[in-house]
Each structure stands twice: as structure tokens, then as C-alpha cells.
Length: 503
Image (cartoon, rainbow, N blue to C red; front, top):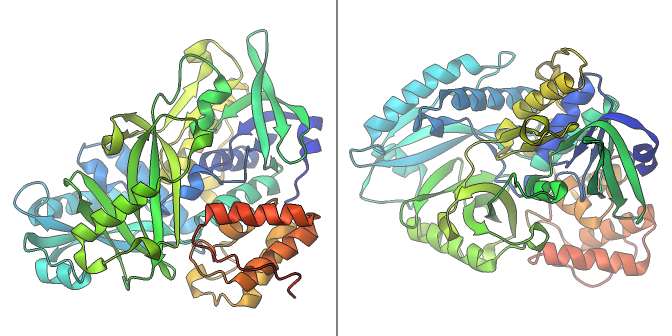
């Protein structure tokens, strides 16, 4: 991929997709594969906001049994199987355990019935012959053996199920963008959509600003897709908001806690459920949610939330003995909410597809509000179906379900790769050359993940900064600015002294 903003200004597109998180990336991929002329832009890096800040899980929908929402359960289970087939190099089934207690809804007998029902429903959701492993009920002894240190006398057993963990969530998204480009889409990061361009009640595209060069230009499109996540209402600049409430959602990365499976951990007053999951050579813990009412641009991780998350995990799992200085990386994203205040905020339970012709009598505009990774592909299919109808282009079958991601047959899973210094350097070179790296955090947080995992040495860090500076023609001042920006994003990172050019 090459960053070519002039192509955005010089072309007429069928679709202009604003926002290159996982929803925008999936929409661009699906539309390009159906033969539409697609532009994909983002104010920052591809997947650099909410999508980067996920807990790296594609949920199978077992929780929807509680509300008997069978359509969402089947959709989620099917999407799990799709990604397991389409991206075997980037995902893995990960077993999770939730301890059971008492005689009510959380008892062994209740969850046993739930697992049996889920197994029957989800068994029809295999994609191209690929299915997720079945779950089962555990005895008390088996549950405590699997979760050492969680010796709570009220535990009666456990529920074991599998969710899909993304070993490299940022690369999964990037490969969606790459595949969209391979099918003819024009993708460009660091292009901010400033305003919709309207002519006689019809949206004809969007006025944009190049965040790196400062140029302003128009992207002309027959249909504009607003996939801006927490910025969706800013693009509309109207009085009828799509996301009246937001929640900031914080996760942390700590060192390896010796787990072979993840588990759910009821914490606090019992209303919150945290997930603890092994990831490569680290452990992911989250998510703590809090109502958010400020500008999305003002979002930063509240350190008090990190402290509270660690404290509640320690209270529920005393043997963990986590400390604040063990946190290698913490990150916060914004998700749509349905109300509530403080930590009692309620996250939105469904994504939304808004046809602005029906809602506002404005032609040429569709908005999508996503709420989780799991349904991004299926929502994208619905968006493109609607787009084809609005463009009067007739039915064009979705090709995505028969298509794997580009790297599916080329490499083994990342956990099997020996990540030597030479391997890291080569991956950085390829990312700078082929993956539209524009900033140092693009390279070290989203094209590679040693910094996120606390494994990036000062030597490799400065080699990466020098290599990027040379390849991207950064001045010494720009390189220092990039290092400072990275320090703010990853406070635990050891920047070290300037080292000059490291070969």
C-alpha cells in the first residue's frame, strides 16, 4: 500500500468510507470485492483509535442466552467461525472458565443447561467446515485446579467455553484494508473529514484535510458511509445525535501470569465481570468502563481506572498480587453507551445501521455505529447491500464469506514465530515500505507489538526510530517529537538515550 492522497482528489467514487476502524475496513473490503469504487480514509492511522483498544476477543454470543436473543447468538457464533477460517494465522480459540456458585442462575446446573442449549444452536454455525470447540461444565476440583489461587469456598464448579482471541488484532484489521486495496480501493490514513458536501439535499462527498501535509481537498462520492465511531456525530454536525452517550473502556497488559486459559472474574459488587486472558507472553485484563461526556479528542487513560481495575482483580483473585508497576501497557477506547453514570454506565447492546434518507430525508449518506469486533463483517455486508440498493446497482452477491485474508496461507500463527531482533527489523522494514507507516507509533504499536508487550529494548526502539526517520525523511526534530509522542502513549517504555544510527 502507498499513501497517495492525490488519488482521492482526482477520482469519482461510488463509496467514500469515513473511518478506518474495523467497521470501516470491513465495509471497504466487502464493497471493493463487489466491484464498487471505494475510498477509505481515517483522521489517524488505520484502526488507531477504538479498534486498537479492544480486549482482542471475538465473542461467540453465549451471553445472549440470558435474554433469549437467538438471532444475535447465531450471528456471533457464525462470525467467530468465519474469522477462524479466514485468519488462522491471526486468531486462536481460547478456552475460558467462569466459576459457578450457589443454586440460581450462576449455578453449575443452570450453566450446564445454557451450555447444552448453546452447543445445539451454535453447531449449525460452522463456516467452510470450520467450527469452534464445544464447551462443558467443570467440577469444583477441576475449576480450582485450572484457576490456581482462586480458592473461594462458594465456588461449586465452572463453565468452560471457547472464545476467539486475536493474536494480532491490528494486523487483522490491516489485512482487511490491504485486501480492499488489492481489489481496487483507495485507502489513505491521516486524512480528516471536515464536513459533508451537500448539493440540493444530496451528500456528494466530503471535504477533507491531509493531517500530514495540510492540504484541503474534496473526495467526491455517490454515497458516503459515516463509520467514524465516537466521531460520528461530529461529521454530521446535527442536533439529532447517533451516539448520545459514550463510555471509556480501559484494558491493561501485564506480564505472563502462567495461565493456559482465560477466565471471567466477577468483581466489585458482582455486577462487573472482568476477563483475564493469556496473550502471547503477556496477560490481558479488562474491561473497566466509565461514562464519558467530553470531546473524543480529549480522551486519555485515567490512571485511577487502572488502579481500580488492578485492585478489584486482586480482591477477587488474591494470589495474583498485581502491582501498578507491573502494567506494561494500558489503553482506553470509546464505545457507544445506552445510559448510566460512572462505572454503572451501560454499553450499547446492538450496532446500528442508519439510512439517512429514511431518518432525515438526506440522500447519499449512511451511518454505522458498531459496538464490538465480532459483528463488524456481518454489519459490513448489510451496509454494502443497502449501498447497492441506494445506488440502484442491483444485487451483487457478497464474496467475503468465500475469501480468506491475504496472510492466511503464508505463515504460521504469531505465537509460533521466533521474534528475534532480525525478525523485528525485517518486519519494520516491510511495514515502512508496504503498510503506510507515517508515524513511529504506527510502526511500534500497530504494525508490530513488542512495545505493547513490554519487550522492546532501547536499542531496537532507536533503531526503529532511525530507520523510520531515514525512510520517511524526518528531520532530527521530527524524530524527537515522534519519540516523545511514543513515550506519552507507552509510559512504561524505556526510551533510553539517543543512539544515532544503529545498524
